[in-house]
Amino acid sequence: MSSAKQEWLGAARTAMEIEAASVSRAACRLDSELIRAADPILAHPGKVVVTGIGKSGHIARKIVATLCSTGTAAGFQHPAEAVHGDLSRHGATAERLALGLILRESHGTLAGVITDGDLRRALTNHDDIRGLCAGDVMTRTPVTIGPESSLGEALERMDRRPSQISVLPVADASGRALGLIRWHDIYRGVPLMCRSLFRWLTRAAQHAGSEPRP
Image 1 (cartoon, one colour):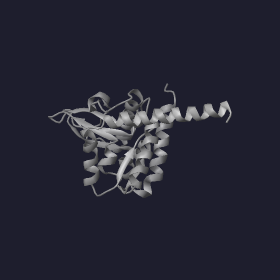
Image 2 (cartoon, rainbow, N blue to C red):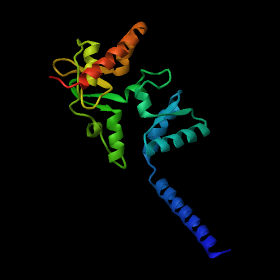
Image 3 (tube, one colour):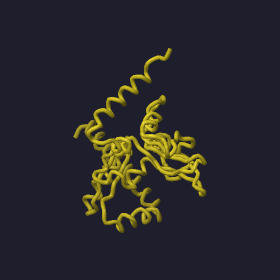
Image 4 (spheres, one colour):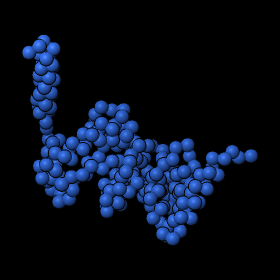
């Protein structure tokens, strides 16, 4: 065998030895957190939804494949697609709302909100997010709207800003968090026969906002 091919074999063996050593070190780090993650999966009769973006998304898909191959129903959900209503028929369940999560103080005052953008930034800026708290990644002074405001006002508040948002916390005059409204909540609030008009008005409002004012 030529020396070049011997080098190829040597490089392959070295790579596998490095990977084996990494797996061994990972095994030593296993603790009660593994049990904490496994317990709710085993106790829940439904499907495990795994999400992630970028490299985390690739790992999430591998986790889904492993779960499915060992008998646990699982599926991958892209965070951005979940925001646009693609969590199958469970569009308004807790899994989806977690992508637009309101945080409240003990007395109910709005403390902040966590969106998919906040999660993406946390994953981008930190190699390991397990040590982070909700307060470390949340948007502390989110744009809000009152419960008596119209859907048109909510839509305008989402759109008329440098960077558009898709979730809007609802808070009363005292700052108490009451709920969360999403773009799709507004869309569903419009009767089907009026949706074409709704889209036209939305485009018109965006166009008017982009024109220079005298």
